[in-house]
Length: 378
Ligand SMILES: *Cc1c(COP(=O)(O)O)cnc(C)c1O
Image (cartoon, rainbow, N blue to C red; front, top):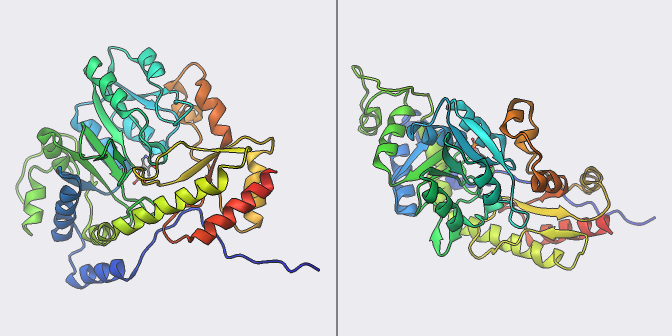
């Protein structure tokens, strides 16, 4: 009987946590000040240094997008253009303001928003466009900015996949209108859960600083000085969306290690590309992993084998695969976001498979996944 090689479980994604994060969390626990204070202030300063622009931290990436849109005055009766192929977080964040997400098709090459379709769906109600930096790539970001400028609408980048990615030698978030990042457990950096908004727009920054703390005016400044607001005013709808010191402590430790984590992600992605480029039964996204720091590694299945079978086969080899994403215009709650078929999205999403990618994988793991995948596709 052949000897069966048992390989360890290869996880699709995971939080990558070391002694630094654990020590940082313990320190906050020892201080017994878990809410929003010194660590959050420190994390925002570090992020401001990283992006060369101000940062406001919140408790999720979804909250970051929600508050950014609210700060722009977007709400009932307004429309926001967004690609259908994104996490439902983007759609829910738009809907949370009262505005309507308008589902747009994707570019078949890079899976970012199709501007021709966006142009068709633009109307007098359109107030913003949200480009989603799918898998860490940003597509024709310059074209998207031109599109928005010509139509006098705002841009809120959903950069949840693109922490660390550069475009034309400039870091995403360091330029442009507004960029929203996620620090959920499996993103390029994590704070447990969390997110941030990066922008130069002082009015937007001020509004989000208040709206993350139930709209309590200037509460951010007070908390960063270790004080509380006992008598205050509220000018607009607020939410309980602030970041805690516990989360920020994890985020600071992760940011300090980011250079290595980013390089690890890029190195693993490049290895996948080399391993898989000879296989005619699949296609990798055309991303440049010197400038892109990939959050996920997505391939298209070009074989006749059903995606569900591929996922099942590889799970028998202890390899977890994923699907990013089931398109939002097919969800019951968002079926009104689009009335005609989205040809590229509808055709493409069925082919998408996400391979394991996180900094705790080795090149050997990537080789194992690649060879097992090629085997199944033959
Ligand atoms: C993760 C993610 C978000 C939301 O971030 P959370 O921190 O999970 O709320 C938004 N958009 C995309 C594309 C994401 O992957």
